[in-house]
Image (cartoon, rainbow, N blue to C red; front, top):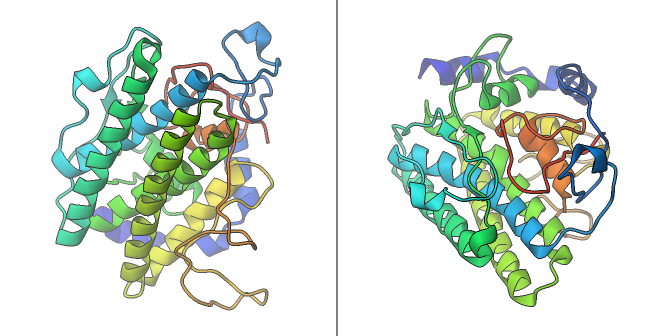
Amino acid sequence: MADTDHLLTSLDARALRRADRRNFFTSSATASALAGGFVLAAKPEAAHAQSAPSDADILNFALNLEYLEAQFYLFAATGAGLPSASTSGTTGTPGEATGGRRVAFTDPAVAQYAREIAADEKAHVNFLRTALGNSAVAQPAIDIGATPDGAFSTAARAAGLIGPGAAFDPYASDENFLLAAYIFEDVGATAYKGASPLLSNKTFLEAAAGILAVEAYHAALVRTTLYAKGLETPSLIDASEAISAARDSLDGTAELDQGLRPRSPSGSPTASNIAPLDENGIAYSRSAGQVLNIVYLNNTAVTSGGFFPNVNGTLRMSAAN
C-alpha cells in the first residue's frame, strides 16, 4: 500500500529526540489540574483531592481500555465493532467508535492473530461488564480512524513515522496494523499490573491477573511478529523504537518502555527484546494517570483526548509530567 511505503521510507525516528516529542505533546496540550496516580476527578472542584479508588472505579477504568482494544481489533479483523449490547449503559456518556474498518490482510498468520485477539478483547469487555453489573460504564466516544488529525496519525507523527499533515492508516496493511496494535498492547499489560494491587476483592484480583496474563500474551505475539518481519524490513523495528520512545515521553521521567531492539551501554544492537523488563526481569507498571497520558496523547493533566474524546467513570484524569 502507498501509505505503508510512505511510512517506511519517511521514517527518521533516530533523528528525533524524546525532548522534541515531549515538546510536541506539551505545545498541543491544554493545561488542567494536577492528578497523580489513581485520582478521583468526578468534580472539577475536587480535582486536587486524593482518594483511594473503589474496585468498581478500577474495573471501569479497565473497561474503557477494553472498549478501545476490542473495537480496534474487531474492526480490523471483521469490519464490524462491538454489538450494542456490549456497549450500552446508564452510567457515563455513551459514544461511538469511529473510523474503523477491515484490514485486507496478506499474511494468513497475522489475519488469524487479529481474529483471536479480537475475540479475547470482546470477551474481556463482556466479563468486566458482567462483573460490574449496573455499575458498568457505557462505552465512551472512541477515535480509531485514519484521518490526518486522528489519534493514530497524531501518535505516528509524534513518533516521527509520518510528516506534518500526513495520515497513518492502521488498516492499510499487515505492517501498519501491527504497529497500531503495538501502541496498545504494552500499555494494557502495564495498566493491569499497576491496577491489580489496588483491588481489595480477591475474586476481582484473580480475574485482573488473568486478564493481565492474556494482555501479556497478546503483547508478546505482536512484538514477536513485528520483530520477525523487521528482520527483512528493519524500519519496522526502528518504528517500534520510535513508538516506544514516544510513549515514554508521555508517561513521565521514568523509563517504562522498550522497543524491540535492546542496546548495550555502548549503543550497539544486541538480541531481540520481546519481553520488556526491568533489571530484575519484572514487567513494568503504570498508574492510571500514566496510562491515560498515552491514550490521550498528552503529557499534562487532562480528562480526554487522543483515542478518547470522552472517558466514562471516575478515573479519567491523566498525569502532569
